[in-house]
Length: 290
Image (cartoon, rainbow, N blue to C red):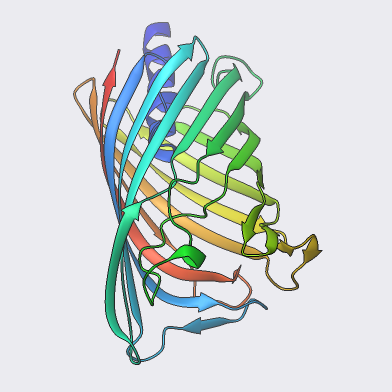
């Protein structure tokens, strides 16, 4: 009986976590590589005061992204992940017609260290999160195309740090994570500009099917302070977004898994600010090494 309980517990932690964080290693995994493909459709935008407006007649945008992800265990409770994205955008307006652009996105290196593993104690699992994003993509202000379809990044370095708390209850795995990020300044002509600090929070719930896979749902909120120009805040330039998603993972043997996520932004006032509102789907294939 004890062995069965331990197996079920490990399945909940491993499968549930993999569903909610695609590049995360399970307790028995040493490394992981995979590919992901994302397709999104913009259905509107939130203005600088938070009002939602649907895309106008003849205005459309579709966003595609393919990513390679790799994760390796660097300590018994520590792991490092690298995400390499390549993005394409199709955008059309009545005045300018259609345009397509593509390019390498911003490389993201992230780390996780679990001080307490979920399910191993009565106390919940606690992990330190950290990440660095490199400006390998092209920002909208340096775009060479009229509709900026070749914009694939922010063109600034970013550093982030946060905490994740999770616990398993049989097949259930609830989790919360909070991170904060700072961006480096950059020159735009004669203007010293800087994006504001960013805070992100996510609450998720995963359910593991023993020996088969898992499903999960999450709600994520991101808030960004006003940007600044020559150290002066630019009013109403901050950004925020509330996004929901549902995910699923199917195990294929011991080392392969298929993953998918559907995400969406609701067309409701004040659920976003200075953001496009979109819906989309992400599909991925991961290969782990034990």
